[in-house]
Image (cartoon, rainbow, N blue to C red; front, top):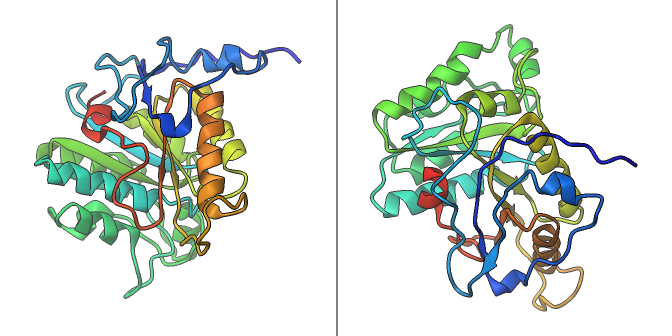
Length: 296
C-alpha cells in the first residue's frame, strides 16, 4: 500500500506529555509520513507539567484576527462528550479572568424545558450576553441540523453560522466554539462542521467518549482533519458515563479503556496533546494549558 502525502497545514507544537501516559514509542512505517505532517517538533517529557503548544502557529487563513485566541471543539461522533469538554475549558478560562466568547452555531434535538448544550456552555461561561447569542439556530428533532430544519419548514442560515460566532469577538478575549455532531457531520446541504472550522480558522479540540474503539475513531478523525488542512490543538477522551467499577485495574473498566486508549493515541500521534477527562472531573489528566493552546 502506498503512503499518501496529505499536505497537512498544521499547528507546530511541542508537547510535554505526563508520564501518566508513558513515553511515545516508534510509530509504524505506514503511518509515519502522514504523522510527520501534524508537527515538525519532537515531543519532550516533563513530569507534572501541563502540555503546552509553541506560540508560533502555521494554519489556514482565518477571518478571525490572528491576535484573537480560540478553539473549535469537535467530536469523533455525536454524543462524544464535546459539551462536557467545552464547559470545562470555559470554566477554566473564566477562573483565570479571561472574557470568553461562546458559540454553538446550530443545534438539533433541542426540546423546550429539556437540557440544552448551549445552556450548559452559557452557564459555564457565567451567562455572558444571551442564550440566543450562544445558539442562534436550534431545532427540535434529534437529526442532522439541516434535516431537523427541513422538518420544521426552515432553512439554516449559512451566513449566521459564521457571523454569529464572529460577533463574540467584540466582547471577549477568547472564543470557544462547539460544533454539532462529528467533525464531518453535515450542517447544511452544502457545509460540514469541518468547513465551518476551516472558515473560522480555529484549531481543533478533538473529543471522543473514550469507549472501546476510541483509538480508531480518533485516528480516523485526525487524519481526515489533516487532509482537510485543519489544525489540531489536542485530543480529549471525555468519560461521559460513570465508571461503575471499583477496581480500575480491570481491563474492561471504562476508565482503564480510556487510559489505555490515550496511551495508544499518544504512541500513534506523539506530537499531539492527549488527555482524559474522567467522569464528573473538573480537569483533564494530564492537565492541559487551555489559555496557551487557545493563543496558539
